[in-house]
Length: 126
Ligand SMILES: [Cu+2]
Image (cartoon, rainbow, N blue to C red; front, side):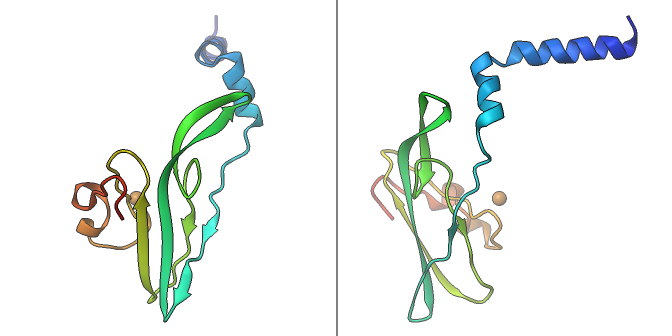
């Protein structure tokens, strides 16, 4: 067996073994999840973004609901649209039954204001 044929057969058989038929079908059918835009609400020159961490369920595989967590929806969260220099308020409501935190991916903020252990939100708190 040539190296090329060996790699081809290993590659094909590994791909076939790792994914069940349902998973392969889901891969082919699920559209890419693009989070919606959240532009905030402006009041007296302050832009407020209301975000709610909540439980839900999502159909990743046709006919099968999977418990998920999302922000303002059952899975994932919105893309926040902020403008440089804006005075913003990020109002995060933890509607989960456990502690949570949010990491502000893409924002240039000090580490202590970027989620993680320094910004735990208790269940029911903001
Ligand atoms: Cu990040």
